[in-house]
Picture (cartoon, rainbow, N blue to C red):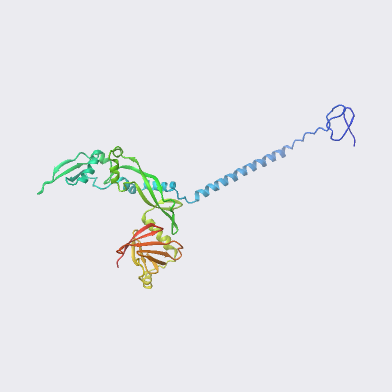
Length: 360
């Protein structure tokens, strides 16, 4: 079918853009018809919903990751151990004062009397005199048949302010400056434990101590003069915490001993004892742990407050290695003293508790 220019009537080939005769534009592409308003609006709504859905999904993904992170157990690290130690020292005034306070003399007394020949005590009190805690000593005669002189040190106002109970304290707080042991976590039965070694630093030091020229000598008199401590740690409620020896012992007893079926009941202990053969290793007998519970070792079992667990005992000198049935590789060592009166329980080289032999 022939096509003709509408201006000059000249024929042109299909697809030509301009007339060869007059140059009129041919076959101009028509503009697309606008989409109906309803269709355009619907597309916008769909795009809006897709954007919202994508945002909600992204929030759910982020929230799920955050929730998983919050529910995960705290990792053993320098920061987690430092946090646990600092929380322990901030909450436990007795533990804190044991590190910060001097208890080598009756500091709560208004006067301390020292014999003239006791040069060691006099030298120490002279240090406190230089710190302003005591007044300069006054020499007095003791009287009696054998006359002796003694020196009287009177407690001054700064000394009274430094007292906490009957102890003389050098600071109000202490915190962990350096921590190790977080790379030596062990499974104590069902409980993760570790022994932290922490180097501490004093906070909020007493004014008399901070300015004392004898600061180093005073530090040496503290119970832990080097401000280095070893503290047992355990993962409790997914957070690392400082625990005491009794808790460590309880974790060992319930975590390791509790893996075998219990045999309990009135009179059952006597029946169990009569069924076991005694002898064979140094730990045989009845022992009391530091936390008060009673343990009894036989040739093939452990009885913990009436609960019996079958076990294998391996002896190497005074060390007896106990592996309870069903505990896998969870073994513990009992190191019996030479005289047989005391013993130490350890797991993985870490001391758990002290035992005292009970005599019938």
